[in-house]
Structure formats: C-alpha cells, structure tokens
Length: 59
Image (tube, rainbow, N blue to C red; front, side, top):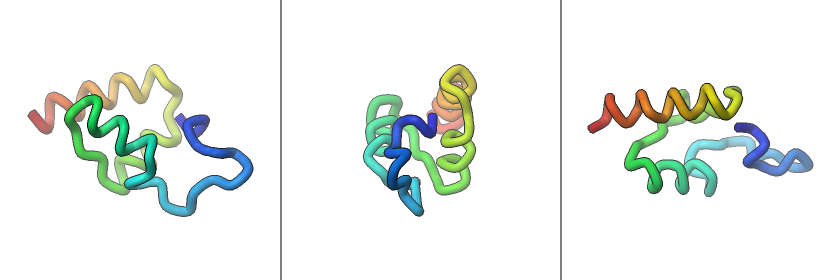
C-alpha cells in the first residue's frame, strides 16, 4: 500500500494522512499508528483482508 504516498517525499508519520483518512471513512474503521505501519507494508491483497478483519473487530 506504500504506493498510495509520494515516493519522492514520503511522510514521516502516516497515521492521519489523506489515504488513511479516506480508508477509515470508506470502511467505517479507525486505524491507529501501529495498524497504519502494518498496512503501509502490506501488498494490496493483504491489506484488503486486514481491513475486513478490522471491520469485524470494530463493529
């Protein structure tokens, strides 16, 4: 998922950045700093599964 951010100037802190805010709003979940780092390092398929897990945990 790291491709959702600029590769020229990646953010120092990814929690609360626009891509994660959009994901939180679209899926009705909250992503903390640790989870943001985990998702950042995942390929898209892994991230989709984790987001679905977060939905189940948080609903």
